[in-house]
Image (tube, rainbow, N blue to C red; front, side):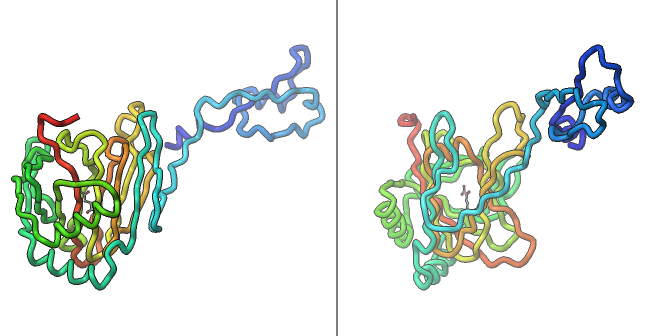
Length: 282
Ligand SMILES: O=C(O)CCC(=O)C(=O)O
């Protein structure tokens, strides 16, 4: 990193008429070839007729982008890649707090929560959270399937109808997540399984403890998977808040809910989606 920074300084060098003898000042500068900074002026009168030649920097100094925090109601265009726009719609208070309180209790008690096992690098591991799946079709991610479950809890049907009315989108499936405490989490991923079709719209409704929903832009190929300079967004998702991700968001961004290392109460997150049968995927 230090080496990168050094190379990326603005570079310049003193150039004089070729018939002028080099002053000791110039000679000492010439020995290092370059001068850091374009505003450096000669204070030795014997160098006054010399020109300061600007050389293009060999590498531009890169700054790690500051994390953007989104916590107010609104539509946010978070990027615009050549293929299209990634957009978020945040609606804190979508379910008002007193309603959200009893809904949290009911969902916590009545959803058939289970701990799913996934496969990564040939090894099976248990997800650090509990989940449940609703929909006429199974849902496969991380090389493990959740069975179709058409028996929607009436509260979930009511919430789905309300979200569809407000957003204008329709959904046929729901992945429920229960984060039991701060150690429960979901790692970096995109909801981009082929069964979700192109440009999936995900409507995510949260209840209970506020947890940080973090997003990072996928790096261009030349970064070789390094996210150091990726744009980042943090959205504190609180009790009753709705977040809709749309457009190219799943193609161009990843998201996660990281672990937190202090006490955290349980949180429930409902992610409404549309699953397509294999024959109707675009
Ligand atoms: O809990 C959340 O807010 C995010 C859940 C999530 O990323 C997912 O279910 O794919």
